[in-house]
Image 1 (tube, rainbow, N blue to C red):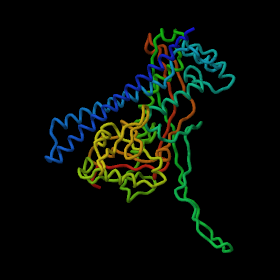
Image 2 (tube, rainbow, N blue to C red):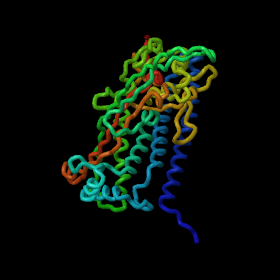
Image 3 (cartoon, rainbow, N blue to C red):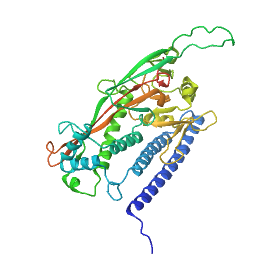
Amino acid sequence: MTELASPSGLETKSADADLADAFGEFMTTFEAFKASNDEKLAQIERRLGADVVTSDKVERISTVLDEHKRRLDDLALKRLRPALGSTGREAPSEHKAAFDAYLRRGDERAMRTLDLKAMSYGSGADGGYLVPDEIEAEIGKRLAQISPIRSIASVRQVSSAVLKKPFAISGPAVGWVAETAARPQTASPTLDELQFPTAELYAMPAATPALLEDAVVDLDQWIAAEIETAFAEQEGTAFVTGNGTNKPKGFLDYTKVADASWTWGQIGYVATGIAGGLPTSNPSDKLIDLVYALKAGYRQNATWVMNRKTQASIRKLKDADGNYLWQPPAGAGQRAMLMGFPLVEAEDMPDAATDATPIAFGDFSRGYLVVDRTGVRVLRDPYSAKPYVLFYTTKRVGGGVQDFEAIKLMKYGTT
């Protein structure tokens, strides 16, 4: 008997094929980009200036390359999303079944019964109800995949409104002594208490009555899929440029100083020496300076962070041997590399401008801390946008720099 393929199996094969095709198109475009950019550089060497047609061609291919990369990332993320159908799902837990009844029909009775048992699932209709643990874990997993800074930072869950974290700025004094010599008293370590308050992050997806009445649709997965982009976009902005007022404090909001004058509590930068850009002569030297502004212990796990426009300009640079500094991902779902270090694209990083800091480099797992307060709350609202049902979904998130030595910036300026 011939075994028929399941719909989910066909979808997986189709997704794999789409991903493979997209990656092939991306690599083909990159080869075309290299050929056109090599031609442009050869023209500059021969005639002290590139042909306008060739320059335009390089820019067009670079734009297409960005679009292919974005499509590749979207397909890789889509492949990781579970299907919304209920076929093959495990039996729901008591909390999950009660939450499903609340989402579909607004039936709060089971949720209130759980509240009386555990006093932890919600606070009544005015405050909404906490989602089941498995849904919260799914939301956190998706945010880690699509929120650029969260994907490379340290993440800690807390149950309080503020995380207070002591950090040793300097360790105790140590030294060598003879076996029988007296041990002098050593200096105490210097500690700094860092505080990371959590702020409320919200999204409000809407559903039609038909969707809610369809028993096949997994509303847990629907909620997670609907809010992932909204949460990721708001987080991404706050982790980069947030001012710390009712939102996380972004690493670009701290005081920035020249790396030679760096002290604890500030973010050090390396200046390009040119207002608004990199030097025209040996621009890669400044990137090397930025890499080695970071101590060896941080470089091992360092990552570049920049937006799409900055990456497009960096992509054209070569080293002294004629090799491109920027290299495409080794496979679908992986990151591009710059000078041997992975590159994360964060659209909230500033564009190239005088005295802007469009490039960051560092060990963000040690440098930046994301604080998640446990619990994602959903309030069902069938009244505000009839006939649609709104789901006011909130979570509390904080963030800030926890190790000021671990992140360095490139400043497009003279000082």
